[in-house]
Every structure is written in structure tokens, then in C-alpha cells.
Image 1: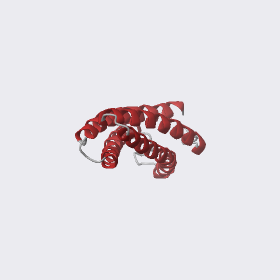
Image 2 (image 1 turned 180 degrees about the horizontal axis):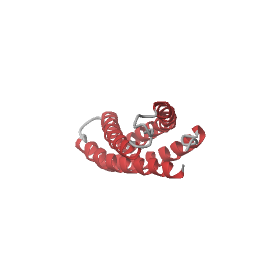
Image 3 (image 1 turned 90 degrees about the vertical axis):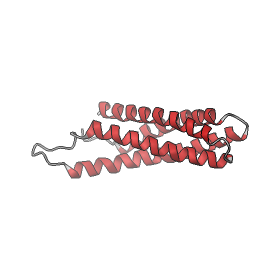
Image 4 (image 1 turned 90 degrees about the horizontal axis):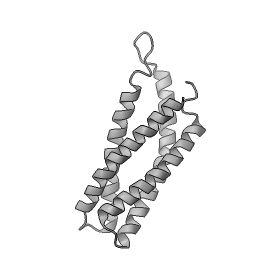
Amino acid sequence: MLREYLKINRNVLIAAATSTVFAAVISQALVDQENYLNTTYTTIADYVIYFSVFSGLFYLDNRKRYKLESGKTDTARLRHEIIRLITALGVAQVAYTISRWVIQYYLLEIGYDPYITSIIAQVTSTGIFMIVMNLSMLITRLYKDD
């Protein structure tokens, strides 16, 4: 059980680190845009990169987890855990999105460079995300069946 939580946390951190780098570059490239557009486009790019990396890592970690001895997939267990995972991640994503957008927009408004605002917003929001996600996974008992 603990191992599964650690894998998810590792995957989140790797995906977040990857998207932080790309989002900072994108934010700086959009320096001439209005601050709300820079923030919005950077957040969208962040999501695309983050979910691409996270999904790939999650698949690699779990591709054999739901296989039955017959070779078929245990779809009931897979469906049940995906619903719990989406619930846990969904709540955390709301907290992440709001905090990231507000922090980046505020820092742009007070004159910070776009790449710095993106990095600060992402690191701070990822910390918030990790706390909310882990609490949500414990509340939903994501891996209680293991």
C-alpha cells in the first residue's frame, strides 16, 4: 500500500518538474501577452505536459497490476481504483489550478519576470497539490484493497 502511494507521489513530482521547465519557457515566450493571457496559456501548457508525463508514468507503473492469472484485465478493480484516483486527483487539481493561476497572475501584475512567476507559481501550487492529493487518497482509501 505505501509503495503505491510513493509511486504516485514520485510520478506527480516527475511530471511537475517536467512541466515546470516547459511552462517557464512558454511563459517567457509569451512576455508580450496580457498578464491574464500569459497566465492562462501557461497553465494550459502546464496541464498538457503534466498529464502526458503523469499518464505515461502511471501506465508504466501499473500495466501489470490489474492482470488476472488468465491474462485478462480485472476491469472491476481497475474501474474502482480509477474512480478513486480521479476523485483524489480531481480535488487536488482544483486547488492546484486556482492557486497556480492566482499566484502567477499576481506576480506578473507586480512586475516579476514571466519565467520566474511561472516557476514560483508552479512550485507553490505543486506543494498545495501534493498535500491535498495525499489527504484525498487517504480519505478515499485509494489502495485499501491491497
